[in-house]
Image (cartoon, rainbow, N blue to C red):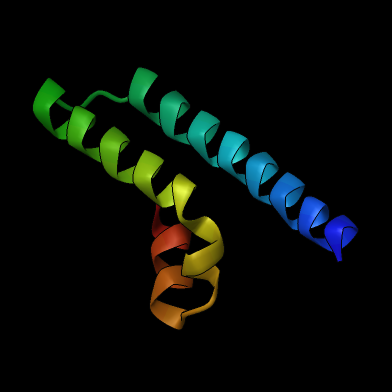
Amino acid sequence: MIGLLRFFITIWIFGLIVLALVALSSFIYSTEPEPARSDRLRTRVRMALMWPVAILSSAGRARLRRG
């Protein structure tokens, strides 16, 4: 049981890092003005934290695909 929990936590952390790096890359290379760019970064980092929960619903999966 502990091994399975450790596996899920490792997968969650890996997904968090990957999605946060994608959000940061989009923030750095965006040509949008500053307020919209910062809001989008904040939203994407929040989604990166909650991605395992988002995968459980169809609306969450669509939101993750849209970025």
